[in-house]
Length: 165
Image 1 (cartoon, one colour):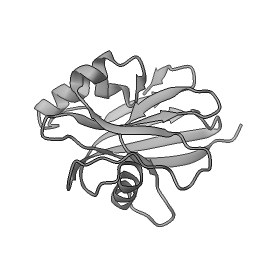
Image 2 (cartoon, rainbow, N blue to C red; image 1 turned 90 degrees about the vertical axis):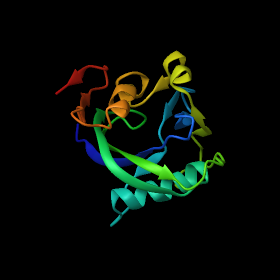
Image 3 (cartoon, one colour; image 1 turned 45 degrees about the horizontal axis):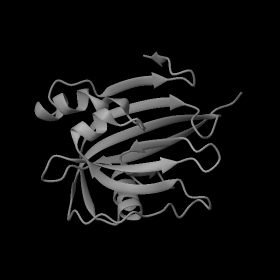
Image 4 (cartoon, rainbow, N blue to C red; image 1 turned 135 degrees about the vertical axis):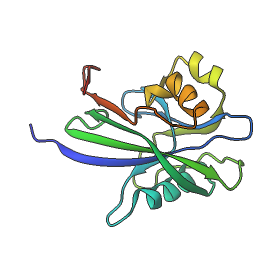
């Protein structure tokens, strides 16, 4: 089976209350749901920063300024079974915090259900999957340390959920 590669860039945006901006997705075929920071696939000749600015606007209705790369995550499969995903997570600052749930103009059946800020407790207690998984725990320690000395590469997950390095 040949895999194709997909690179995704996403923004980690916190508001003044230290709540994290996440987007709730629901697969229209399987009804599986998950939270993840706003972001999407890099377009042709588009930088990761340009992708983040475009995707945050589309998904959340706000403008942002991408900053430091803090995590890299890989996984195989997902909604597209023959894809090797590489995700880049950058800290970003929002110009305002008036979120409006948007949509993905590239697809007909929408995955995006809601965009909003969630507190650490809401994320930790969520029964809905949160990706990358580090956002449920280690992220908060990394944030407190200013992302100094943290692990940037989060590993590779295969379809069985096994983490490989």
